[in-house]
Length: 240
Image 1 (cartoon, helix red, strand yellow):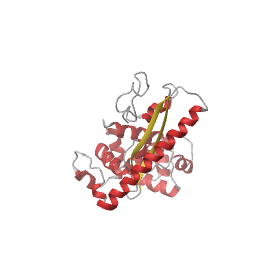
Image 2 (cartoon, one colour):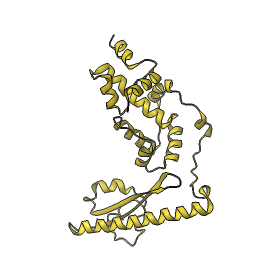
Image 3 (cartoon, helix red, strand yellow):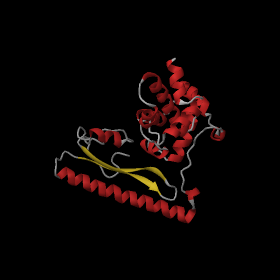
């Protein structure tokens, strides 16, 4: 978002005091502190079946309810209109010129052969111990994953949290960590399961549920794939 793109702002305006490019979703957490209202919406291109960005509008305000509620409604109307317009233009471009002319080409600067490597589930637990990245988006994604191991996370959910398309996020995650998103997610779940099996009295079924696995059989199968032993055996040998 560029401050002032929808008009001239006063020097005292909250948006003027921010960088030229700002993440308004973070700013909006304390929007009352900044005397502003904010609305956004994801831009989703149906032909690509992915989210490609977000559109947002914001306005400085010192008004209080109910006027502020009316302002928020008008901002939402604006953002919905802009989203519809952008998605409509994208649809026309794809229909007339094809997807290749629409997709933004990202400069990954990475050896693409890494995408062809097979993930080794058995080595994943060792890899995450020494894994490191300086990429802010991947760091945020990892923090989100690690804070939500109890949920059934998807690539689309996590990529949307860091405002990247699922395609680009998948490539970037593999480049930065050496592991695919799904392998990393399962490895972290199994790592936590190992801790719970050793240090808690929770049943294996409860641990499976607590880590978002849909079936106990799938949890046991995944656990053995990553550790080489079944959960029951791991708990028995660990306690001994």
